[in-house]
Length: 380
Image (cartoon, rainbow, N blue to C red):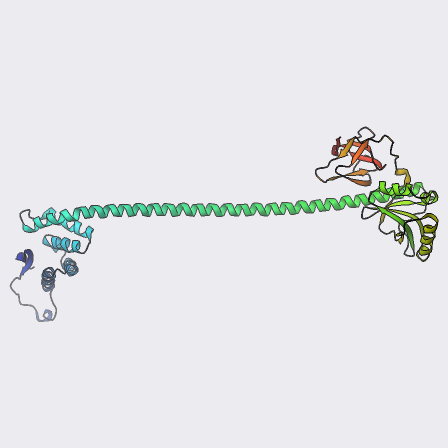
């Protein structure tokens, strides 16, 4: 093993290697460099690097020496490693090498004193580097925490959006279901109302066997229609203003569109023009009277359904239905009774009977009398 000692060169202690006496080598080994020679070469390279202030080369030779002989990892090598590392701004490595060197160095040596002065520079730099490392670590932890919170926030936001979409979808499905149910209920009610109107018309026709049925006339026949009014009261008012004989012959029919037709005769279509002309000359019927089919009539409103309007008529209640905006006037107390007419909100009426299961008989200003649900009537 070579023996090292320090030689002063340019104020620094450098390595000088004293080689052991050369021993004869076997012929087979003379073609390869021995480990001792490799160590000597690295030592020579280290001295050259130190003299040239080639700090990177210094560190390279020191690492090579440690690989060749781990026992060399002590003493002056630590000092030169610290100085080279410090020059290359490798603060942690410089501090570690100086600490190890000072722990075992001769306190009287020149390198020891130089190492102390070097430590005075390295220590605050190490403290600053450690503080910066702690700051960066804290910043990294804070950034990781912020990203984690942001991820949780986005996940929660996505969950809320998904939940909102589910609620919105459920609301749409519920609205669709309710709309379908309402449509079905309206259809059933319309069918029931139509059935009730048909039954009422049949019953009325049966009670008046001497009056021919003008609903459902064949294609070759029609009725002479002299007026069409929005309400049955307006239709009756028109009839009361007609000439006596013609008023007696007039009949009122409810159409599918909700209007009320006033007809005075049923004739063959071929005879209609002449009959209209005759009635115009004789009774002065409106010039726009015409021959109408009856397939759109839903029922006949018979004269005995009318009620006289008293001279001292004073409305006591008015219709108010917040849900539908109108109230049906029916022929009897109950939703199963035929609808006579529809009364819009604000229609003023007189209550002429006591309540029957919540239903009261009322009289409208145009003389129509029927039953309405008292819940949707408010006092004036």
